[in-house]
Image (cartoon, rainbow, N blue to C red; front, side, top):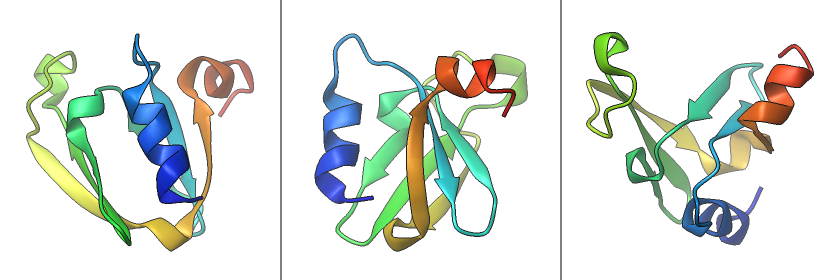
Length: 83
């Protein structure tokens, strides 16, 4: 995945949540564009508190190496596929 694809997905209006699939087999859901900050080689991804999943304020975060992102899929497509 490249930086331009990520930036394009984050700038779409209205924003459509998506899922990252990474090389280690993990997945990460991006439900708020405000909590996903792209860098040249990595992505800062914040996660809201489980008690307030609609909040654009993070309770915890991770950093993902951009080179390990295999693909992105819209969350509605991922849910239909059973992922």
